[in-house]
Length: 407
Image 1 (cartoon, rainbow, N blue to C red):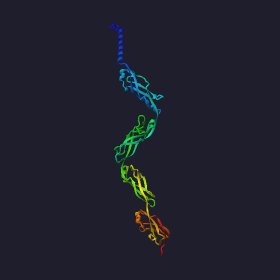
Image 2: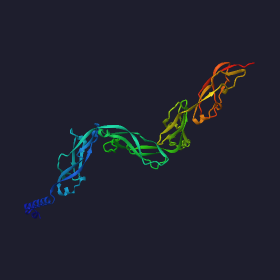
Image 3: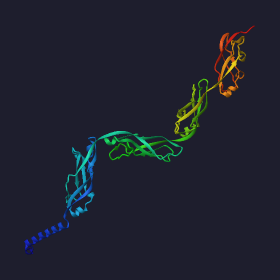
Image 4: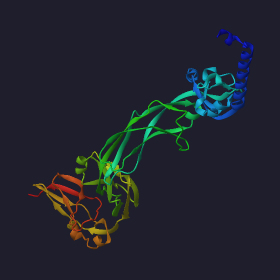
């Protein structure tokens, strides 16, 4: 047996080597080494906090993806997918030119796939990391039902911190939360996500800015509404010798809002407008809210009332009075009184034409009240009791002598 195994040993070894060689040749012919390029391999960024420690933020200028050239057996290369590649940019290795080397591997196949190095790099731009505070505004969408009014819109917290690249933060105009109020009939609270808008009113990309709150509580306070009549009373007296006519104002109804309890207390709103010493027509505006005394608020489109008042000069008529036309009343006991006038007294009576037509010395009923008189000569005002309403009579005084009554 041993002789059979060792017989022609050299020839047998040679045959084995030839067989191996043939096998290698066949493999290289059927599964040769080849190269291929895989495009748009995503690059993973690590150690980003290395820049944040220096109060810097970055933006990728180029190198977010890479095109990788690999070499290996055709059978392996043909089975590769983009997901088999691992491309990593370590931001802690950022160079003075803001370049980061990209390390590309194919972990699944190890040394069976060779990455043909072509100095893959990511280029970034650096900016200062800044932080700024903004008020959170509430923007409502939809509409509350008729008969309801949004009094207040608040958030908790109402201030939010936004951090990011200086160029991005400088563009911020406002931070808002949107709350739908459709069909709501009582005050409520909802959780909402803050949104950042730039100065052009465009929603900003949240990828490069950070908010210190991802959600906030938005509170909406609702009140009921009520339509009530508005009244404005004219008070005071125009300039002497003038009269006011046809006072007009608008609106005559306004809408208020409040709790049901407070609304029940308000049946109408009344205000006062003073015309003291006015002698020209009045065109004016007043704040309707100044007339509201209850804990309700004015929500009407008309926040002011327009007032128009005609001021006209009165017509006048002279009435002549003799001494015997003036009655001396309430003369104290034991005294006598005598008017000292020689000439008739001219009294100017003012009013409208229709009123003056009926005015005479007889229906003016002039008199002097002497209840407080004592002995001597003094001036006393003539008083009148006109039967015609709306007439004005200026103050007129006469000299009266008071003396002891005879015997």
